[in-house]
Length: 262
Image (cartoon, one colour):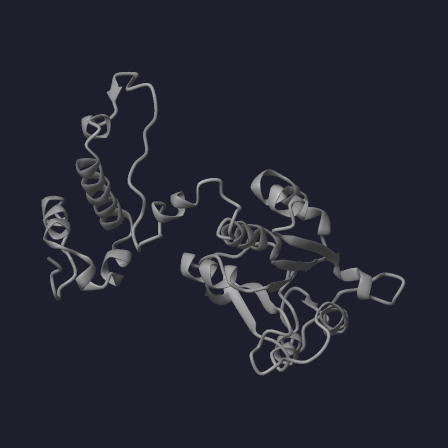
């Protein structure tokens, strides 16, 4: 996968040399380049912002440097299949929510281009013009506001990179973690079996793989119902069997109405 990031703070992305993302870059799985937006300015002050039309607080990022940056990093036109140009991602509190499902969607792309806004944001015409040439998605990490898009890009890129083939040593772990099947992950334990008077649940030490799988499923259901009832409500009714519903009932939670899987 190729990834380009444009920011006025390129040094913000030094952590991308570390850990598994750094390894993915080193072995060529991830071809990543960070670009300074000010490269595409032409005045002595390397200006990237100006006051907003219509008044109001703060500053808005000017369209000229952004337009030149996108022209340089994504030249050409969009082909009928949409694969000639990258997918442009713009972190914004006004964007669509970033989810694990979107991470999987982005992991299937061959080229991602991130535009990191600052101040009050990027002139809307930049996004409107880019949308005539390439897919554009404004994306939000949640219902809060940050200083800029850099933190969001780090989060999104880590979520996407770990889904690329060969990045994780044990790809099977992707099937058991939170959000993989619409549920939060069950609690995790390791050695020692007893620590400060607290024991690892007996079932996890039993060696009975069927009981362990059932315990993890039940705990995932109960944890999700307690912390993210919206996720339980979003489950397709047929994905819950009688044992799932019984676990929710024992925990005092209601299960989604509908067909019950056997």
